[in-house]
Image (cartoon, rainbow, N blue to C red):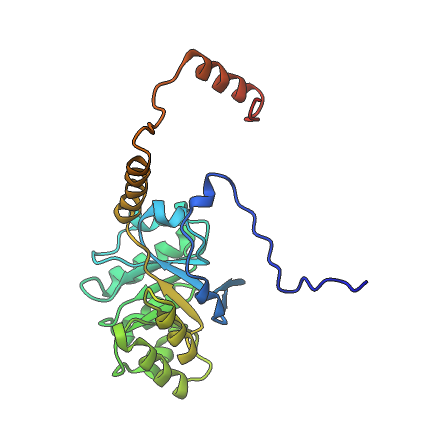
Length: 258
């Protein structure tokens, strides 16, 4: 009798409650990924929502938001995440010494890398590079970016966010810089994600639905259940028997009593 081939079998273990956590599209795992500070990263979630960040299976978090970077926010995200976090430190309104200090604080808080946006000057990036030992990620918004200048200033990873043109920009960069690490937005469809991977992105950034959208989906399911079964009622009132059962479950370590 031959031995069954189990090479393609990946065991998946989950808890009952955490089985409802956010799962990123399987297509992203076709990416080669990159190793940052010893961690293999293929999937990156773009969010600062700590509830989403805590309840997803992303390999890393991209914590960039449209306000001046604040240490309180980065600390909250890093504390909540179970994966490496890349923290935005400025580039638009926030720049200069302030960005450098925020980057230094982010490293002390435990960030795996800092992210600088397109308007930041190369001299500002060089200042940050002198202060920190974690990777600097530079956002690339279009094909006109001076990639060589960014790399010379101390950038370690490129983050391509060029909207619908992202695959095209990734491909152009990859042709000129075959070994530079690239993360890129993949969109929300398998087709756009695959196109970005085939263009040369190492890792894919995924924008999740909002907490409000997820709650809305749950409520729609509850309403559909009620519509399908008009006599169905959610049990919301505890009886003395329920209270006793809960108490005994706590005493027995959570084992369900039969």
